Amino acid sequence: MKIASLGQPRWRSLVLGAVIVWSGWLAWQRWSEPRWQGRNVAEWFREFQLSPSRNLRNGREALQALAALKDHSGPFLIHHAQTIGEFSPFFKATAWVSHKAPRPLLSPLGPLLARLERQAELELDRPVTARRALGELRLPAKLLLQVRPALSDPNPIQQLKAIQILGTAGSGAEECVPLLTPFLGSTNPSLSQSALRSISELGEASAAAVPELIRLLAFPESPGVTFATLKALGRIGPKAAPALPAIRAWGTPGAATNRFTIRQAALSALAIDPGQIWASDWLRTRLDSGVLSHFTTFTNVAALFVPELWHWAEGSELEEWLLSVDLLNQLKLDPNRLIQTVERRLASAAPGSDDELNSVHRLFLLQPEHPEALRIMIRHLQSADPIWVLGVLQNSVVGAETSSLLPEVRKLMVAPNPEIQRQAKQTWFELTGQP
Image (cartoon, rainbow, N blue to C red; front, side, top):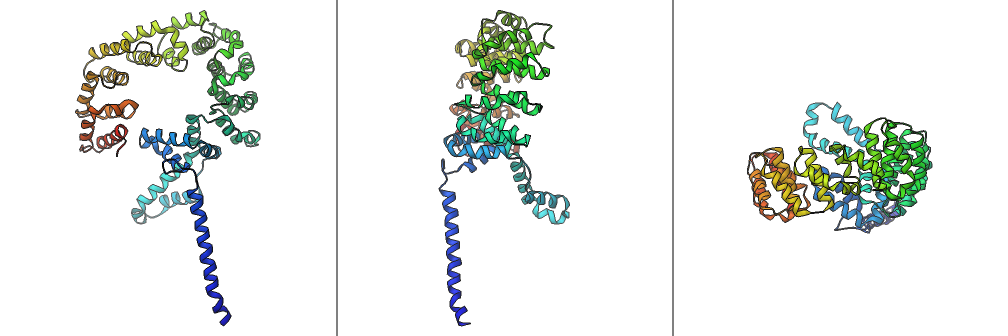
């Protein structure tokens, strides 16, 4: 007994020392991680995951942080993009309790269970969000090539995820193309179509895939594959010039199964070579909202139709007008003329109409301090339904310059309507960066 009593303090000291060492190791692991503005990669990723339901400013800041920490955020995002989203056993148990437990027991646990279920949804959505973040960041290919082993994984889901990740490459994307091209001939439609999308996303860097894309046009599997192949060639641009004869064949009325395929063939032909007269003639006689919407992807093609765009901007249906104004703004040809064009549309619009709201929005984006745009926006902020203007301000990067709107937004932060109050607080944060 005496020996045991003498040994007891020693064991206590050993246990206490082990706990201290373990705690110190955990703290070192946590705080030795690279940080940006005091937060690590996992914390910024969670912020990015929550940003759609919070505000755009947080999402932009989270992406900036993940880009700054790319040497560490890259492996983190790739790991989560490769996982298969599923609920953990703990959250499955939580779901079971929330559905099976007696109501009197659930009442006090309601807020906790709702929070756990929300956490479960985020956990399930993590792979999708990680791929979305990779697509926004466009990390160097050398960081993404670590997924190469997954391309030969017997599980096609793992192959699919690796193909999708390679399609998000930025600099050095040419290294990814030889890994993607073999999957264009896969008998698994999911893999072949995903490889085609990734090659299209890589744009000019996919020039090495042009011969295989030409083969796909020669032996079409389906109208959808043909359409996607034509689009991929157009996104590759001038380096896809060897494909022009095959594209021209699909741009011939009667050869294609529908006008959408002919339209994409014409767009792609002009993206590769602006001198393709047959393509410009075909598009010029069929300009509509469908063609204009595709110009947003192929702005170099839109530049060939500037007179037609000005014609649409001077007077047309709202959808075509919006598309043409946005394209002219994107091309940055004559900002003053464009502002005058929008002013004329606004002057003829009925108060409160879709024409007025959309004209004000475009005018605000073109010239944030435009007096008439500010006057009408203040009028809407003072109306019974200010949600629309609050939404415009939340989605406008230039909104922070518009200080004259802040007093009206501030008033709405204490509005009786909870939804208006919530939107106003979010708008205030977007404009000022302050809660």
